[in-house]
Length: 407
Image (cartoon, rainbow, N blue to C red; front, side, top):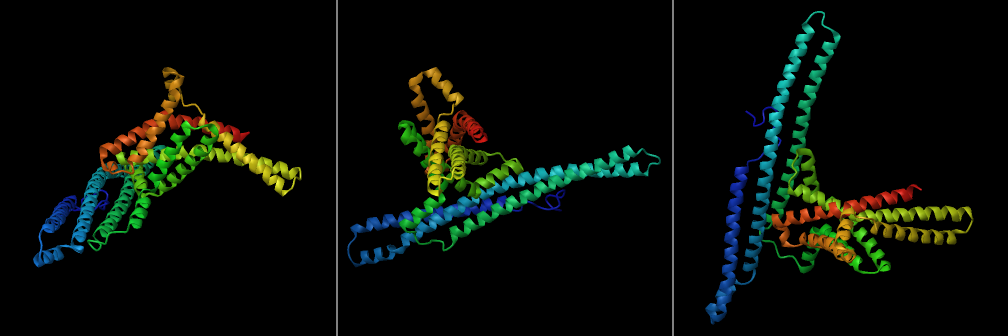
């Protein structure tokens, strides 16, 4: 008998217990490899006090590639165990969702059977009003659509499961391929780190420029704000291309899995988008000035060089003015806090909010981000900052920019 008889197939195949057992074995192996590596290091250290041919032979047997291979093997098996632990937890969640869908399919199938039986009974009755026949037919259609809807959700779950299984399989292949691969070069490590953390690095640079802009004069602040907006836009593109964020958001909207990973991804992408918005609006305002100046120059027959020069000046003037206006847009909650604390508190309050963005962005680049408590705290702090500062300010700035563009 199939495990999900009312769906008709298994959208989340796999055995969590078997995965847990394998993960436990790999964790034990990783611990043993780590112990062996430490032991070899200790023996080599102690052997420095031992002299003679026997000592040289002993060190020759233990030295060389052995410590490195033990270390790399420990790392590879630990990584494989970690991936299996994550997959075990994901699979448990997928199967719980599949069981809920199967229960819904059972209820919807029963409702469809009743509706079809009623429709058949109605059609067999003599001289029945047309309205009652139509009502019975509509009930069958609704029941059939409900059943198809839950089966469609189950098919989407199956795709999510398949994508997750593929990612885990690739990660395991990478972790166990040539169980103890050679150590990458320093350049390779740097490139890998940048590739793995590009979006978070761009977000940190953007937040840092935003913080610095608070303490400098307006002529210096505007270029910093443009650079910060550009970095936020680049971070948005990088984070949006990360399948981890896409999978978390899809799981939330399609299966109702609004877990910490969903909110973390939502806050990350929202923060990047809001950080880029002032720059996009400023460029759009500058582009409007460029178009107007170009049309005016062409109509007045000023010549190509003069027209281009006038257009460039209009673009720069419009963009800078729009960025200044966006930067000065009111933020109701922060403005209220300044009024309560006094005018001297404005810069410290702004710096505190901007500094929180720097701190939370930096957390994503440190080992502390692997701690769920730290990661959730950073997401909560980011979300609070968006709610009290970025979202109101961006909304007002966007409304002003739209009004300017509509003129």
